[in-house]
Image (cartoon, rainbow, N blue to C red; front, side):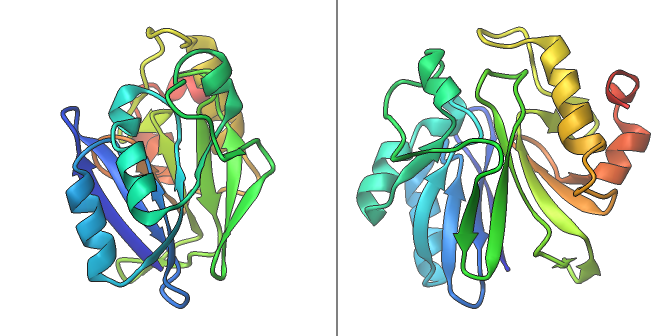
Amino acid sequence: MILIKLVVGQLGTNCYIFGSKTSKDVVIIDPGGHADIIIKNIEQINAKPIAILLTHGHFDHVQKVGRIMRHFQIPLMYNKKEFDSGIYTRKKADKWLNEGDFIKIGEITLKILHAPGHSPGSICFYTNDVKKYNDKAIDGVIFSGDLIFRRSVGRSDMPGGDSNQLFSSIKTKIMHNAELTNNFIIFPGHMGITSIGAEKELNYFRNYFL
């Protein structure tokens, strides 16, 4: 597995370079700033970008979409509800992503969950094809965007946000999803990484989504 976390932009957004160590295919998730650093990290490992994926369309997650697309000549993929709601209209997707879709990255299958609440078209990406992280056995990884954070949750007081939807999404799409276990690592849109199990025990808002 290739998994590089870069903290980019003015609001400290987590941009992820994720993919197959075997094929060198990678996707770029939420390029919210520092395009030169993102490009340099990809070229240093001779990776082959195949797409830009957006968890949602807020400005701090999309600032360098155009620059990265032009540099690597790759498509943009996100949920159409972000475009239709006006949250992100700068560029239409080359492929609209819906729950149940998947993206092949070498031998890895990355699956899509529609998880509104932070924004209408917020999506998460997950796979159970990754079985080890930092030399520890895991059951998989999920890129949660701004849905859930380490010990916290995303904001719902911005245009398109809805607190009831947010907690419902966390509950149904993550915490009570039969495909996701406590041993899934959560890679959020800001701050540090965590796990589903840890957030069930320690998240300050757990009573709202368990």
